[in-house]
Image 1 (cartoon, each protein chain N blue to C red):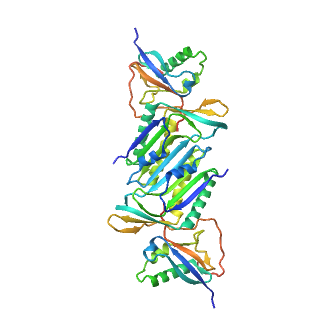
Image 2 (spheres, rainbow over the protein chains, first blue to last red):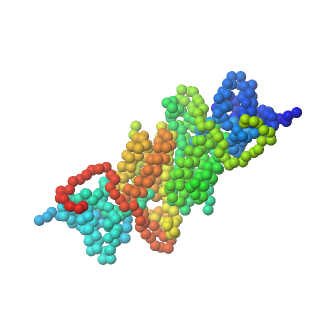
Image 3 (tube, each protein chain N blue to C red):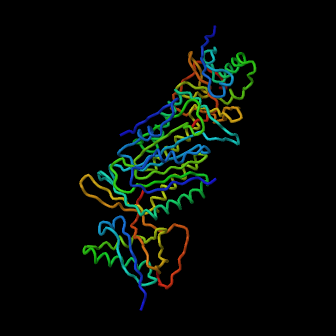
Length: 90
Length: 90
Length: 162
Length: 162
């Protein structure tokens, strides 16, 4: 049986329109960034019946507390991540 | 007889090593900037026996309260001027 | 000697005096302070306030990286103060303060400008504008890409195409 | 609407708070403040203080011209604060404050930088450094040339060669 990992995904910026707090989801060990983002979309659609903002997920990045993940990264432990829409600080 | 003009010359910066306050001098009506500077040098040599800093006068500009004079300017009324060493404000 | 950093995300009003005091240094003859404030209009809409959402841990990490990059470019002796506000501000409220001091002015100006430009593109901070008509909207921004120190973590399983 | 100017030569300590307060504007989202201070060394000599000599009338006229030039380049709405200290300062004392605010940050940074660079070359201000060894010296500077608005005053007599 394939091992699964538990992820907690913090939501920021425009995601707060849809859900406050964070998402809990499970992915396969070694899941790619794209797979994690797909899972985030699915979880949001379950939680928020009207959610159709796939473009927001598409344009967002995943990150840990220390760095933004790239498409060559993958997930191989249960951990906290954040999904980050395009930024505009300052 | 040629008309003469009375000038009061304010001194700034390194000139304060030699004289505090201002200089009073007379120049011919229509005197050029170079002639005024020559007269300033002569007046300083009279007031300050050790004065030999012709280079300071050479590198300095003359000005009114409103603008720095150029070599094409000349003096045709009695007035207050200032002699300004190279600047370094800020 | 390496200069000092003060890096923060704050829910209390940002203090220009604290920034200026922090970067003061008897060996430095110049300081540049950038102040970002909430203005009363944007893209033709009348704004009454802005809420800032900040991913604090990664923002502070980004600030640390920017300090390192600024020192690599403009001198290790730079003193750097960066604070970003988190929460809601009215018009005129200070959203960000960046202050940099250096022996000579060129380095302060360039490092301060560099830091604000990079923050706009790299720090995980978002703003929601509140309009006088009662509406509000999350402002479109710059898509993030990874800039941090390269700490490649290998995959345990291969996912072709990703 | 044309922005505001505050231009001064002061024998009292310069106030960064006054500068920041003056340029604040609900239509402006950015401000840049430059602070020039006395540092404890110059050209290898240990400095304990600096005296600033200022030709006040012409300095204020130069500041006015710089404001006009900055607005012509970066927008008429700029708010501009410029104060220069006159007299003696100890280490860390503020010799000059320049603050500029604008709707967007690029204009504030560029105008503030422009003003300090031009002041260094055009404003009739001199400094005398006081060294820890008891010596003091007027600092070498930039020779002035005329920059102001062209208001040519013809000569009544011709002086060939000048």
